[in-house]
Length: 335
Image (cartoon, rainbow, N blue to C red; front, side, top):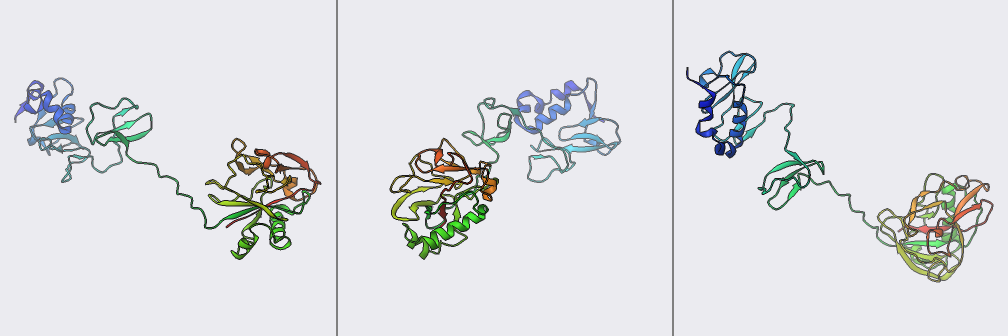
């Protein structure tokens, strides 16, 4: 039986430093061979023979490992392929990690610690971004890209933002009752407002599309996303014509335009709202203030209202009023 000392093994051509760096197989072999001083290795002839503990064996084309008291071939390495965790090498692979429940630990480093120069195909774990990344030949890039949110598509047609001619106290019959008041106000009682004919012919003046621009204590009636809404006055056919466009969440108006102008509501009105402020006074919130005449069900307590003679968040979130006050509603019509 042919046996080799550590010194003899480390003088083998494939174990010289330059060869060790040449392939992953040689590097793994080197790690296998760096064992306790005095340990002996044997060749291919020991595969299948009995062994004990962590005993290993090696010759020029085979690494053997003691598995269940028998030497088993771990990997052929001079062919340029390595198998770990399996006794057979899958054809066409240079590294076969077998099928088991273990894992492989990639080199770990932060952004800025990438190897340089880098070669296309190198992989590592970036501890700054907590992503695996690969060098694509020009830059280090994540293995994967988080899916982007689906695009929000604007509905066809336009909507309307109409100030009522009628006023009500804080008992609107709840948020749903306020919707019904708006439908009657702009589809039956008042039919001369700017945009009525178009909205009517388009079939927009129905309960499913007409809502009051209010929030109760928990839920808001919100506009549609990415939609153009035209201003109008239910009792003034010459008022209105200006418009705003909602954002991808259905919030607006994203401007500092005073709502009392002639191309908007053409007047100073207090409007029941219950709606909180959004961003920098230019956008309303899709959330309620929580103060809304007991969800617009009783003429007692207080409720938030807005004022049209304003160019900031006071347009929908000015202050509270006694629920016995008589205020207008803004009624919106979806496309």
